[in-house]
Image (tube, rainbow over all chains, first blue to last red; front, side):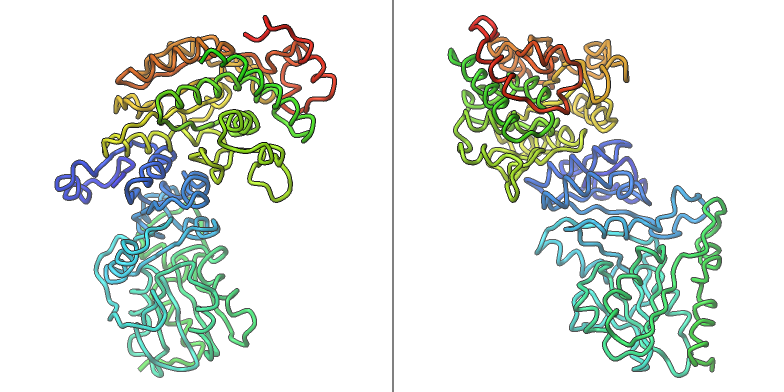
Length: 280
Length: 262
């Protein structure tokens, strides 16, 4: 566990139990990723920091020293999207996943909750590889985990066969709230791999007339854009909900920031009503 | 080690030949670092272990010529330098035997080598990690992050050699971002610093052996000249950072006397 001088209150149990496997490189993300890449010749390093610091600050180290050298480093960021809403735009991680996913060789995971994280970590031990793990700050989970034929994809709710909502990351829990009680109920999928295989995505989403993607990330470069690309040769109508209306110099709680971008439960529900999903 | 100057001479001849053949840039950077690389591979050979990271990856041709002299790569490999489909690219490529990390963007190798050195240290693996930095490259903040942390850890199996040729991409280092007093800076960061003649393989090897025996990180400041040993290149400032050699340079090299070899 390599940390960039962050993790107060969460990192101590690991440090206490495995002092020989804990390294704080200081406030130095570029060196931290490089050092982790070097360590990966003998270990499976996790580089931990928050927000954009482990990704954007050290993007070239991730590209050159991790991805293209195929060094199995797991870059971990806590505080996806607007988790640190009031902290200001420096702490809003809304371009990070797209930036890292644009690097060939990086597998990007954005789990919605600890159940998905468990599944991802199990696969990491079996198949260590260059990876970016984008975590929300809330460990509670509304997802009823079900096995699905497609790896890292869970059905939260099996509903309508014509409309599917696909989400990733913590916002899945907001989607769960948004669809509660809607009749008819749409199908809701969570896909924890941000850059899931395009052919698999197309297969998974085949047959739906309406595909609604929801994410706490910029729409451009986001997950929805990847899904739109995967479905480019299908008749599906794709609606991408995500960060669009962003004034970087105005902050607020995660809920406030979601409301500003129509990503709160009420706005998502309103959006779905336009497809004919009424309230009961 | 007695034939080391001759080996270095061969490396420089091949750098010039390949520069003429390929017409690719960074000739003077390659000549600047060639004695350093020859000396490092000699030390590696005599120890029987060691990793050399050429952080100034644009001097890849110098590394390839040294790898050829030490029998790691073939004549055909070297001749494929910058050819279509070749792994012997214009910047250092880790797919080549004996190359632990691809470089090209400056300020990457030191952190990687520090991590590797740390891993070896934790696993009690006998190792000596050497990072060759350019002086211009010291503008990169990532290098100073790693210099700080390596000294903090007092890592025993990591050393650096700085190719101190005092030129960077557009101007001299002191006219661009002043580095002096460089020795004082590195010492203040907690590094042991040795200053050495950068075109004297015997002096370089001796300094490297001292560094290897130290239980803390050591920085060698190797005083070099871009374009060495050709007077027509050395007098041209940054020009031959970009411009390749021509036949005239090969003739000039052949006309140099044995006394020019050091």
